[in-house]
Figure (tube, rainbow over the protein chains, first blue to last red):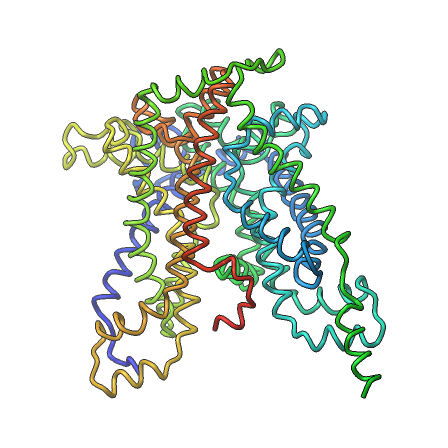
Length: 272
Length: 302
């Protein structure tokens, strides 16, 4: 089937490779160039001298601390989303009456709320809760806005668990909590994995919440750190690019070691 | 017999979670998403500088909103970006995804490379491109022979909009490609075999099998693009900062500036309410089209 090679498509794919590859080359190349060389040769030159100094500068400026904050925020967001989202989805799928219909509809509606539109009251709320300039001030709103998609993904996975398995457990007199722990969670592992990937990426990518909810360098996350670098470093593009590269290292590690889970997770978000 | 029925009835209610299971998540969501939504509508009828308590000001913000020329401009830019993004991303990601779904070895290797932009955050991508597009030190400076005096691509309105679409596409096409790749792999091979026995060529197979089979994925990716487009704040802040002038100040950016740079929270709330209405309208249409509200198992859909 379809044995004849499709040369036209191959050519187009090669064109796309250039579109993806050339900027990435410029990124790598610039990050290892001394600053003076960059000013002369620009981002696409062939590197004559290679230096690690840019990375040292970036690390010295406290970038690793920002990365640690981002990891904490991502982990916190995933934890909150799972702790709240799993029981909620379970109730939506297996509960009865207003829970199944009303709650599910509320979360569908929630898909439509852009976080930017409610940032002003959220800013007020976080301030009043005394969470301004803390990591929780980023985690809680991020988790809340990751919840609708998560509930959609989780309840989709739980709905695929066959009804006779539920019945069999109920016949044995299992409580809802037992059914959740020994049937629902193991059977919906893939949608839980998808939810983890989705929630973590939301936290990882987020710029608006950190921008509004935090202020000091103690609570600065990577995205905000990059944003600040633009004004701090000014024309030192090689250092800026080194920071951009460093910021991708954790996801790169996940990609290398858990590529399948990451790709499946991203695809899973699209399925729903 | 009777016993059996009773047991079955018991089974259908026993072991089912009560409403209490939903309450923690529900309360959390109401506090952090639903209440702020009500809050923003209320604040749009107030004057507030963020320091003293909000003061009710009736329709003042809204009449100002209707007279504000930048609002119309901002809505148009938002719409242009939205349409531009869909027009560029949808066909490219669909074709790439279908191509990448092939089992050939070279396709697998290339699609692993195509995935790489997804590893960068939006902030990192925008910062990288901002520097690469710099008129003095970036790529345009090297291409001065071709571009002539037009090395400042971000300096004109159409240039800035084109750059926003290009950079957004560069970052998000890999994601959509991934979705199409996954979906194209689930199309039964027998459909193609039957079609080629009937003498249908590659183009006709694509039009009459691949495209209809990918219908759901097309809806999903369009949804992502619409929602993403309405809220593309990061990329505007970092790539153009709303400029030149206010030419690329999309709705969320204008709201951010009004609130957190000018501290006019009341008026910013009116803009935010409008954004909320736009997003709700868009997603109601999309929910209807996609049938998300039917609450059925995904297994039934296949």
